[in-house]
Length: 237
Image (cartoon, rainbow, N blue to C red; front, top):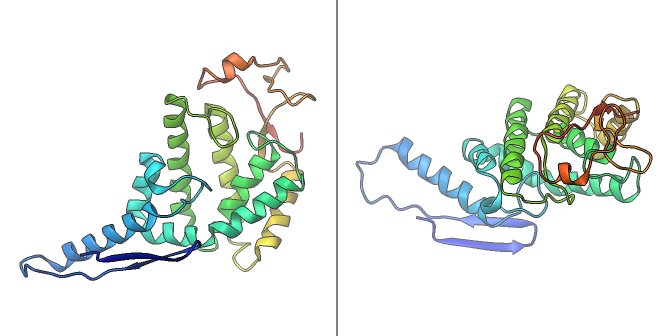
């Protein structure tokens, strides 16, 4: 029975629980499953979640909640190191070290590549890959509900392809970064992006989305369709 939940500060959630077993007929595995599930749910109900700075456990997609259910310890590890990850990303974005585009640009590519490389120091890549896929499934669900994302745009199919490819770039350096600091990983990822190892969505000189022939994509198409004729290009384009 969960008897007390208390916050000691804004960064830490302590869960203090006491479990009373009234019926001896319940098996040990079943009891442990209950404890595991209860701690996971209560932990994330009261904290910002994983790949978003603002969403809580209760507001994320069903696919991400399912991932948490099956990977509670990995989720806790990610949450523990989430603040530092976002601090590095915010620095890159605020100092305009790559570009100003949070969606489809080099900053977007950095966020995904850096996050997966950085979190791979603490969580197995196969689990992170499943989280990345769950996150993109959630983006499709978000599009169906016509919900604008944190960058001010509706998710679309090619943006999801871009994110998943950049996730894989992060995984490709997982072994190299095990002993590196967040700053060292940041510099490594920036160089990979400048060298064209990541992918971004093509824009013209005015920052407007264009197709692979260079024609401007209308805003009406961008805000009404999942499959938009955007164009993926190398990040040094």
